[in-house]
Length: 307
Ligand SMILES: Nc1ncnc2c1ncn2[C@@H]1O[C@H](COP(=O)(O)OP(=O)(O)OP(=O)(O)O)[C@@H](O)[C@H]1O
Image (cartoon, rainbow, N blue to C red; front, side, top):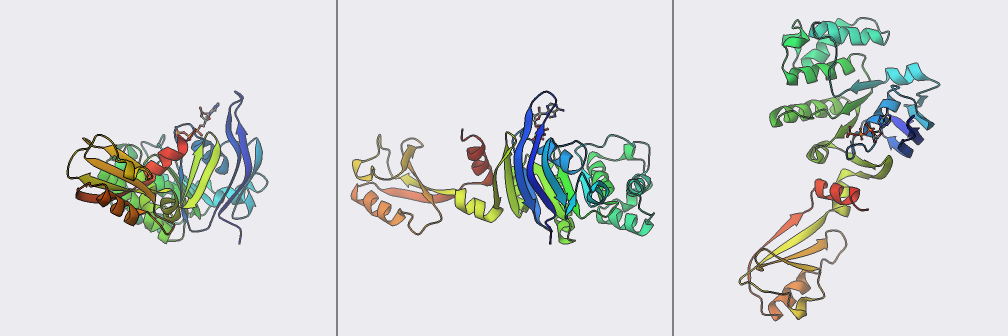
């Protein structure tokens, strides 16, 4: 079975000569929730815009469930829903009319039952006859999703779905997105909130300067690149790490009363047992200890700022 999205050697050079995408290769599997992370200007919007047929690539190919986005444009496009960042038009239309109209754009027959379903799913049914201009920001975001779902797409792009929304609404959005995924829709999400990827994604891709620098199962990524720190709270302050502990990757912090030991969580030996023995031999007294795992955010920042 062809993947939901197959991207091969995709390049985009803008008319200014700027290379926004450099031979990107990426497959998105059917039914997965893929988070695409990258700093500002990394090429996320460019990539989505090409897949959705809004701008043209300068090299490479994209297939949506096997349909080429150039030579088989209509079929490819009909499989995709795009939730853009902002709602620009239709301020004076009603919610229901806007969503029905979006369906019509794809040449599909009217289907009030489907539209009702989508509106109910997004808790918009009560607002169906309201003009969009009268809705709250959060409701408008839901309308964007409803519009994108009107033609029953199998792949949904969400471009920064929670940018600038409050914490409560963000959680609501996460629920909605999870629900969509459970209904079998493949979801590609771009986000600046790494916490969002950490919370929801099956896989994470990181794009930087137009290149995909990493694609990994989220859980593996966190295990593989996420290092743990053991924080040893000392009973007294010291001015330097004792010679007997020089062979460990230790850092003296706090007021000189804290030693931080960084270690890999995978691989059999963490070195903690030896460290504890050597710590005792060096005469240091321990007051407390705790461990901390790197967050996805820390991993991301390390990756993107490596060079
Ligand atoms: N029409 C254009 N002409 C020239 N350069 C462009 C054009 N559109 C985008 N770019 C440049 O291409 C690069 C990638 O932009 P893109 O919008 O894809 O980034 P992004 O990852 O979506 O960033 P953000 O997170 O800020 O939305 C940026 O350096 C941008 O300035």
